Length: 204
Image (cartoon, rainbow, N blue to C red; front, top):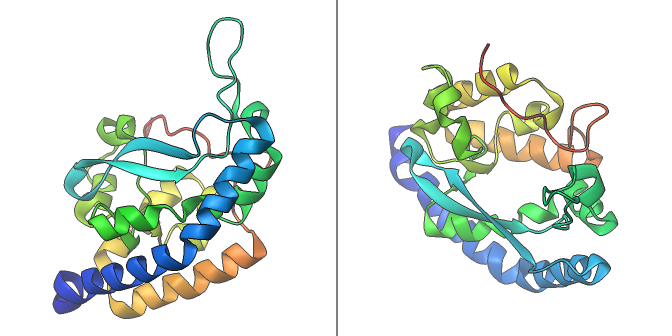
């Protein structure tokens, strides 16, 4: 397991992300442009700082799925009002995640690991939850294939820490297999009655 964690996992990340980027690049551009043309969204890619392994911050990249429409006070409108029709489809099929293959190739992320969350969450984790940063974050992970956004934050973090403690080639194979099934069924994209995941406000 140590050899897989220290060498083979990263080698697989490099090979698969390289091939994936070559194959998906034209498709990524077509999808991004369709979203842009639908609502004239400025730019086609969404960039945001996220914490990676050991809490080191990097710039995550995704396909933009929302407009930047604001209210009369200059504040962004709620997510449901900014999410485009094409963007909703892209999210439900997880196509917006494809550009993160670039983050994997660079070493910011892994194909499999706890999802990189917001930087503002870092001081809100308890010591056990913070262990999710002992490994590189992933495009998909144990929490994503066991409920994704439809489960509670508490449960997500339990799954993340379980993955850290049980990281192995077989575990990663299980994650990939279950993730494919979830994506095909479009399960767990959001919590019931919500378009996006509820914000994490700490453990109290």
